[in-house]
Image (cartoon, rainbow over all chains, first blue to last red; front, side, top):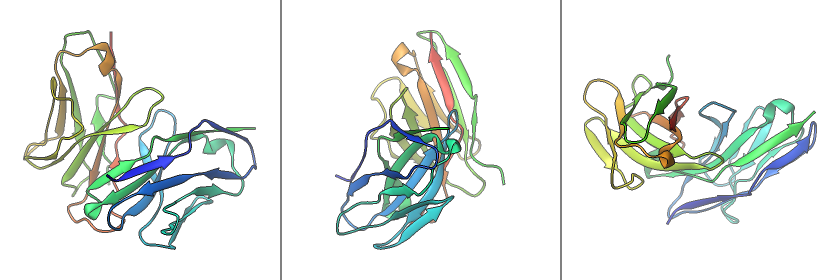
Length: 112
Length: 116
């Protein structure tokens, strides 16, 4: 079945460090891919998305590229801030977006 | 535009009581999803509803849990005879009636259920 696998956390970085959170997927058909972020005590918010191969989603300095050949959608940011501390979820959707499958989440801690 | 609203934000119940969680989707959204998040764990899909219909309840426990999305009013997730293991954050999400590539879900702030 369809699934998402993302790297286990927690990930701890110093401010201004480079961030990569790996995400790979398996899916029948042609899914859309998403990264959601969850700040402490809040619900999930969409961070970025990509709907077809080689698309790059970007927002707030975060980027991810839809790689069909490696079935990956890794999240990157060149210089993290303390305010980026949160849990990041990789997700895919099929069936016109009415079924979304989430990864287990990766907790990021950024130290000042 | 108001976002997805959930209430209560925090709910405390004793073992054996009933918990009733409410979710009002975003205006114009007719699809509602419920997820459960246990402490330090990821998001687990529970159920997907449209107005007056349960579309997919493959993630719902077979007993004590039920969900509805009536023609009028919010979606309700009901947990009967709660046990300590039901303590979790329950999130509701909604999406618009038209799907398509990139159709995202919009999440509410969650209800944090604590069972004493």
